[in-house]
Amino acid sequence: MDRKVTVIGAGNVGATAAQRLGEKELCDVVLIDVIEGVPQGKALDLSEAAPIEKHDAHLTGSNGYEDSAGSDIVIITAGVPRKPGMSRDDLISINAGIVKSVTENVVRYSPDCILIIVSNPLDAMCHVAFETSGFSKRRVMGMAGVLDSARFRTFIARELDVSVESTNAFVLGGHGDTMVPLPRYSTVGGIPITELLSRERIDAIVDRTRTGGAEIVSLLKTGSAYYAPASAAVEMAESILKDKKKILPCAAYLEGEYGINGLFVGVPVKLGRNGIEKVIQIALTDEEQAALNASADAVRGLVDLLKKLN
Ligand SMILES: NC(=O)c1ccc[n+]([C@@H]2O[C@H](COP(=O)([O-])OP(=O)(O)OC[C@H]3O[C@@H](n4cnc5c(N)ncnc54)[C@H](O)[C@@H]3O)[C@@H](O)[C@H]2O)c1
Image (cartoon, rainbow, N blue to C red):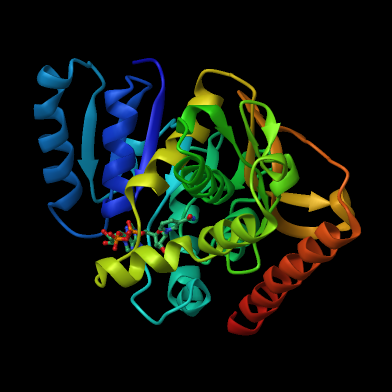
């Protein structure tokens, strides 16, 4: 393949993302982890599935960064996931150190790459990667909105008994309980769900979306969601690798957009070869703007906490 993506963290999200990248034949994949043997073993296992899955992507595993040199995209999933009873924010001190050291290594070998951050707490980890890398704001983004809107879409499709493919949904804000799903911009076959569902049912779906991650943590008990998160990160990578210019909700560094300054917050962006090519601004009602401001305040609180930890 003439494209290369490195995935840092060969755990649940990282290995699943590597699998999807390979099976979609989007690029060669380098899987990196601190645990000896694990990235090598998973990459070999995935490679041995390739003849059956019919793809020619090369997958390699490593404990060092040399193999990652010259990556087009690096997806950072390194860190610890939450356990039942934990919020994403509880992970901040441990994951901040991990994301900082990982970013330093990534930048050394792939100074021109685009960074997609997955590690939690997502928006705060984007700040760590942005500040550590010194990259432009176009080349650092976080995966959360694609996952949150996929969850929203799943619940809408189930509620109306329609194909998930006919659904579209928008979620703004930070990746946490303050995220802001936008029902009037969420559609089925182009029809806003506000025309198809009662306020009560929409509120129930919105609540389930907000707590979608915790629902899975409480079922799994030993980790957090990874199939859908990996799919979401790969959708972002695909839009960049193929220069598709999809409009996707991603954590992006805002400088005045939506009245928010100097913070990573989830907003719709155009994703192409250059990374974030545009932040799409949509008109919000007073209620929606207030919810987005509250979500941004929660992110700011975490960024302030990061400064205290340093
Ligand atoms: N943004 C989102 O929507 C979203 C969704 C799901 C998970 N997550 C987050 O993604 C992260 C990974 O989740 P997971 O389920 O894959 O966890 P996991 O425990 O299965 O995998 C994490 C991997 O990171 C590795 N790691 C730790 N420190 C490292 C380092 N310094 N360098 C390289 N690798 C290192 C671990 O050895 C482990 O294999 C967690 O922080 C989780 O909260 C985010």
